[in-house]
Image (cartoon, rainbow, N blue to C red):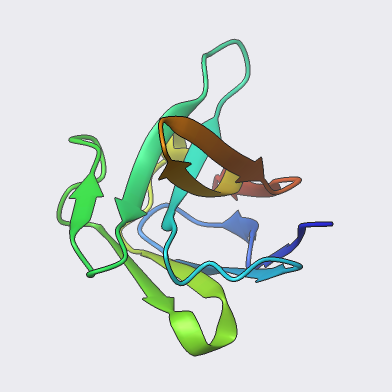
Length: 119
């Protein structure tokens, strides 16, 4: 059974920083693409950042330059460093790990961690 432990969310003032951590157990994520998604109230879930097995990163335009995703394969862990946060970043942030094997997608989601940016 794949399990996630997400941490690092919370309340932060505009301009502040947070570092999200996601530890995955029950699965070797070394060959997975790992990522962070978010969902704000009344909005669809959107990709924030993802990182492939070789370290290639992709970021949403809305967070480019403010967010850095990284991973530690030895720890089955993915991180999201977020700086210069603004109220529009308020959302539940979800960890994701996925792998395409012979055309079949294996995808798993964490339970989410709340990030609130407010003064």
